Image (cartoon, rainbow, N blue to C red):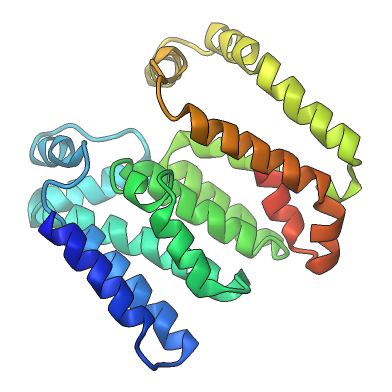
Length: 255
């Protein structure tokens, strides 16, 4: 409890200091990084990662496996420092480049249950999400977008879903986008079943089956809110595109 209290006091202290907006964004990012990197025992898989690092087990994704291998020889804190730095750097870089209200964006990142405090418990997914954010931020630069998407997949294979960024949503009508969303909700389970039948037995099919059959009780209100937000974004996508053309990448991933 003490470390959480210190974290929020640090956030408020930086927020109300009389420094430039640019420095304030970096300082808030620094506080987030330090809490994530130096935490001990915080997050439900913290000690699980330590067991992985101290043993010979390595994740199949190359980037986490490489960091785990290095941490095996340097010390387990190295893993949390490096992963926290990459995740925080990607977020701060994206906020600094694209957010109209960066301080509010940082507050949202910290306060939303599905973001910061969730990401410190799902380290590989957090790494992948950070690179996906950079892919959206640099969506106009095709080579960079491809590089960031490849890095995301190398952190967690579920990042393959980021191929949605290539959807030409600026050419879709509101009706077609809503239809696509509802069709994906109803056909998603069928698609996963077909995919499990096609994939050869191994790690990928095992993990897909594990995620598909895992009990997802809880969080129902937040899922409803996310679906509602998605519908609102789709309904207002023309207005969002008129404000900033790069919003099409965020709309695509929201879809």
